[in-house]
Length: 150
Ligand SMILES: Cc1cc2nc3c(=O)[nH]c(=O)nc-3n(C[C@H](O)[C@H](O)[C@H](O)COP(=O)(O)OP(=O)(O)OC[C@H]3O[C@@H](n4cnc5c(N)ncnc54)[C@H](O)[C@@H]3O)c2cc1C
Image (cartoon, rainbow, N blue to C red; front, top):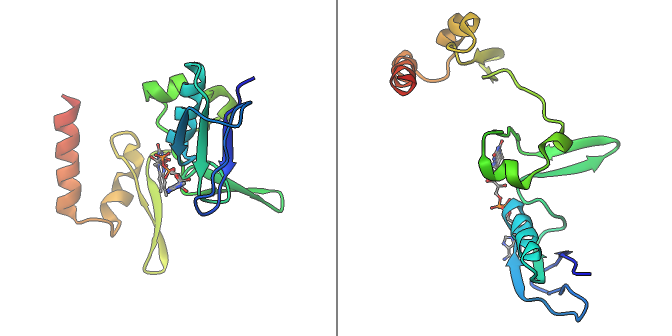
């Protein structure tokens, strides 16, 4: 059986995949791109080795498990419309949840809401009053939205 050997490789030392200990293709980096590349190569009958310099796989989309908690490195919001993502990922298994549009920021000792008033009109006053961007910036965003929506 051909195996994709997603190796944790420190400082350039190499680990090779396949029954004979040899690989057809070396993929550098076990982030989303490298892992998917390895899978595509296997599907085409090649034996890849994926070399990873850090202590784990996932690259920038990575989670650590600590004391029963799952800690994501980065804020992972996933746009489900990507055709390649729909093809390569098992979205049902990811058990994705929806976020409300917008963000909460902390500034000057208080919390501010910045949202998309076209999707959440009730957030318009808070968004206009938030110290994130000038009023002119917000007006320009509104005009851009109108132009794109046409
Ligand atoms: C904070 C943050 C939040 C993000 N949020 C989102 C989001 O919400 N939605 C979204 O779609 N995208 C998001 N992205 C973007 C997304 O994470 C990246 O586009 C995607 O993960 C990049 O994958 P990649 O495989 O190209 O690179 P990476 O994930 O960077 O993987 C590269 C891998 O290669 C390894 N590597 C590098 N050099 C070597 C070497 N010489 N030898 C061996 N290994 C090497 C690295 O250690 C790393 O594991 C976010 C990115 C960041 C930083």
